[in-house]
View 1: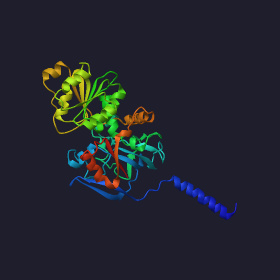
View 2: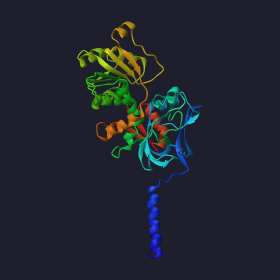
View 3: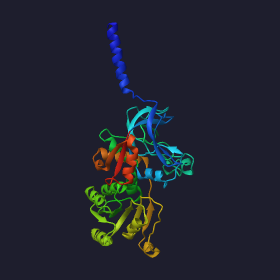
View 4: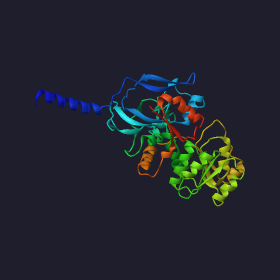
Amino acid sequence: MGRTEAVRTNMKECVAVSSEVPVIGTTMLAERFHAATREVTLEEVPVPRPGPGQVLIRVAFCGICHSDLSLIDGNFPASVPVVTQGHEVAGTIVKLGPGVDQWKVGDRVIPSAGAACLRCRNCLRGNFAACLRLNLMAFAYDGGWAEYVVSGAIGCSRIPDNVPFEQAALLADAVSTPFAAVVRTARVHLGNAVGIWGVGGVGTHLVQLSRLAGGTPIIAVDINDAALERARRLGADYAFRSDDPDLQVRITEATGGRMLDVAFDAVGITATASQAIYNLDTNGQVVTVGMSAQHIDAGSFMEFSLLRKQVKGHLGYQVQDIQILTELLSLGRLDLSESVSAIVPLSEIHRGIEMLQEKVGNPIRILVQP
């Protein structure tokens, strides 16, 4: 081989190698929330470096969640003075921190949206899933409304090749929280009569997952006709308006008189919780998934105790729930194609936030694409 040919061969090899190595700049575009002023800004910030046991992920998509809005409007207390928001992330690993050998560059992953504090009594006992002071991504540390995000290597879930990034991004909260509510807190099983109050982002997934778990019948309750129509299309057997004066009559007829075994309140206000509790069967349970500062009115002690009703609060999910959901998506058991209501570029994050605040198009989930 001549010198010129050898040089060309080496150049080809270098190009081949360099094409496999992600090009990472020194700075990136990121949304930043300033707690003191509640201001949302777009800034150029340094690309974070993964520490020991961490990975750097190039964000493909990240969801805009109502809890993100709660931080902005002050209903959710700020943990740090300045933070990058966004906790529903799907992306590709582009750099490994020291000691990481279970992942490789190029792997498609969903990072967990929380990290155990490692200091509370549950963590000291090794029960990290029940951490009492869980550090939440986008609240206690930087999240995914950015080009890159750092995550712990332990807690990432692999995305199967046939699952689109758009749907994968929904799993770390928008779908995993309803999944845990259905499977772990309510333990919905075959034949349970299930009611869902509020069929927006969380409620729509409660409908789909309750059906997958065997709920029969599934009843959607909302004040929005378009949301009710969508719920019927995605698996609800009945769809009733919450302001219907004959709502209890309709639920009684739909369940053959037995009322509800499980009712989910995905709104989290006094009125919806009270309606859900009122329509329970004996030993029925209400699981509250929505949140607000309002109080729960469970009716009289007499009726509540005689019928042995239950009210349970629910928040979050277990990390393994995300992996279960990726398998359901990969096998075609769960379809989230209709859950992506809109995609906005990171440069238009303010518009995306406003779209969710104003409920433009009755969104299930609006995604940010860096």
